[in-house]
Length: 151
Image 1 (tube, rainbow, N blue to C red):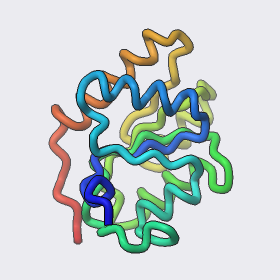
Image 2: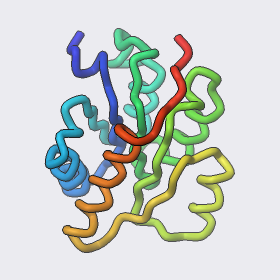
Image 3: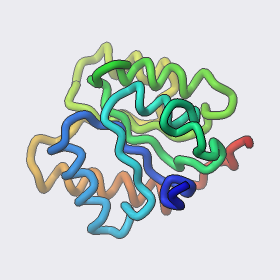
């Protein structure tokens, strides 16, 4: 098993390759992308988080420390991923940050009702987007003190 997958700090769930690349680049600029896994749809995210499917050999208790989650995903929606993560006793303490283009009040409200830790609308401007992602990474990986995940 790849050691990077065994020690995941950031799970990026993003179907748009441009947005994913911008996130990864911004995190790399602050040396925060070494232990990042990028998945491209909600089904793959659930497989990773719950160590099923192609990730069946991944140790469940090895993270991630934070999930950056888009809402508009193929196969399984971001809302459903959030619902499953926050309803499971083994994963509910993983911080989930919705990072999406949606500014819809109902998406914000539903995300918080499901237990999201933060909701951020993606800035349109590249520099602002990069700054936002960098600050997210710095906060969730270096400032925030998460609980120890149950094994």
